[in-house]
Structures are given as structure tokens and as C-alpha cells.
Amino acid sequence: MIEKDIKILIIDDEIDICDQLSGLLSDIGYDCQFSTSSEEGIELFKTNNFSLVLLDIWLNNSKFDGFQALEKIQSIENNIPVIMISGHGNIETAVNSIKKGAYDFIEKPFDSDLLIFKIKKALENLVLKKKKLKTLSTRHLIQNLFQIQKLQKY
Image (cartoon, rainbow, N blue to C red; front, side, top):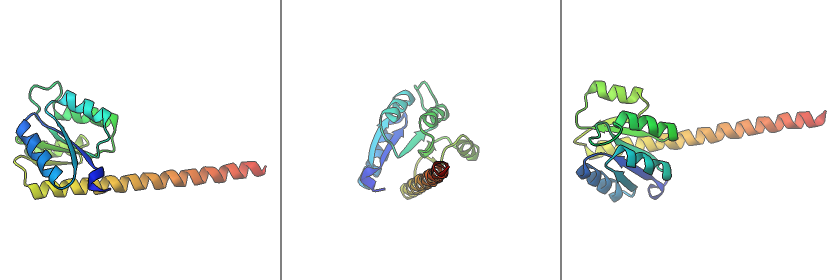
């Protein structure tokens, strides 16, 4: 996966955070889009092919909080890693994020190096998952072909 092929969606109610994250990630070659509301973020997710989502937990003035948005995103595509972010987080929030299906959690203010590390790990994991699914699909296809050949002999 080449950085230019990677699209990252940022959903955070703070425009400054969206700008900061988008600038940081664009500087290293990622294509970023952002939304300041859960509703718009979910619509963007539905209509684009994102590789990763950075999702704030506490989304003011949004229909859904981050956990509800996470659930909606996973119902659309559950293989895309979501990293939850929060300025009000604690260990319980981080654990709850992972239990609900997030790939990881990071607190605001961010350590840029740590954030980039977590994003790269999540994307590497995504590539490995896709390879595994492709291998399993190929194996299943081969098994089906052998079954068809056996049936054709009779």
C-alpha cells in the first residue's frame, strides 16, 4: 500500500484538530478528508474508499457520539481500522474503545510520532488482513474446483 493510495478520514468536532491532523498526515503523503460532525463523517465514509478513520469520542453538536459513529462505520465496513481519539480519555475509555471494536486509542494532545506509528501499524495490519482473506478465498476456490472435478468424473 503506497501512501498516495491511502485515504484517511478524520472525524472531530474541533476544526483546529482536523486541520492539524490533516496537515501532518498530508505532509507524509496520505490523502485526508475531515468532518466536524458524526453524520457528515459517516456519509463521507459511505461514499469513499477510506483506509483508516481517526474518530473523536466526544463529538459536540453531532447526532452520534464517537462510539455510536464507530458502530455505524463498522456496520458499513468492519475491516477498516478506526483509531479513537479524545482529550478527555482515561484507561477505562481506551479499554472501552478497543472492546467496541476500535483498532487503537490515542489521547489529545497527540505525540505526532506516536500517532504516525499507530497509523502505520493499523495500515500494516489492514494489508495483512487483506492478504489473509485473499489467501483464504483462493484456497476455498481451489477446494471447490477439486470438488467440481470429482463430480464431473462421475
